[in-house]
Image 1 (cartoon, rainbow, N blue to C red):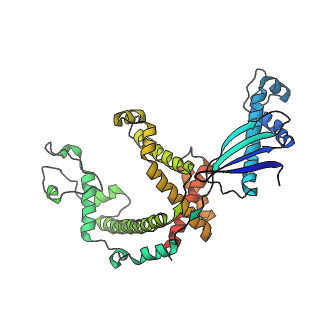
Image 2: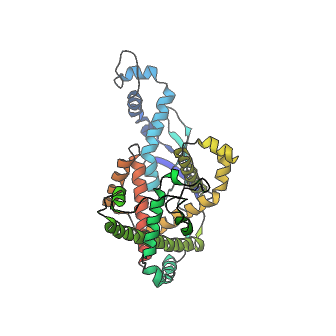
Image 3: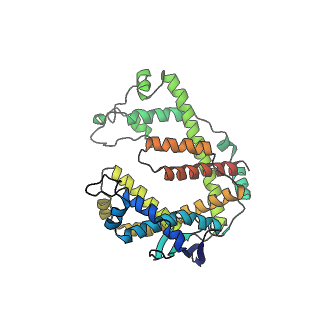
Length: 363
């Protein structure tokens, strides 16, 4: 056991506050490490960066900065130990406040975190079994018709038609995946479609000819239909599990999910070349307004996360380590600035959830 005295105070909404002290001798042991860490980025006349002697650093770096660095290093090392020893199921980033900070004294702290709430789980196996039994034979045996193929080809041709050929009376650019009016397809005044031939499909990708393209297109359409059916069944299962379970969702988790929604929204707006602030002005809303609006969505996403986590815990379902590493490598290859730790957490979460759904589908 570590020489750390702690008391756990339960708060509403499945949150706790850990109050405690790290003994003076343990805290003092971080002094040299903290000074060295601060010195790595210190730039002073007459010394190379990172090569400033400790005696000089002590005269230049305020003691308050050294103490704060000591506290950060001490808690970074001991917080995981506290969580493990006290058997705390923490599920959010800790909010840390320092209550006592002085040389040769214990380090006083308070840590607030959300914990895995007590969940009265619904009978997820029974729910999954019922939902799977309700999938019809037609939904199980998905087929792709010639009409499906021809409609998709028409969508692709329309999406690649030169805009200048669209009539002034009907200034509508058809988008891929959008429903189209077959009567309009026959109107030569509206749009001049590119000829569908070997040359056209070869320009789209690695296709030998029209026949090869149609074969691969048929496979893709079938795969897409199968995925949509799978998602529909999964959604039906998990929504019923959430509805029939009793969950006291921590506010921290709801707020985290709400902030993710707003962050994605901001990213989409920025990608369109617009400023998020201007977009909000146009809507006559503030970020706080959006946070209120997305509370229900945030709560739903938080419940989903908690329920999947609980099922994974009960059934001992974990992502395959090799698959996680492969996924992390792909993320870091496509997003050079991504944080490796966050990438790993994301990969583990996605792959574990996939295994949980696969488990529910085979009940």
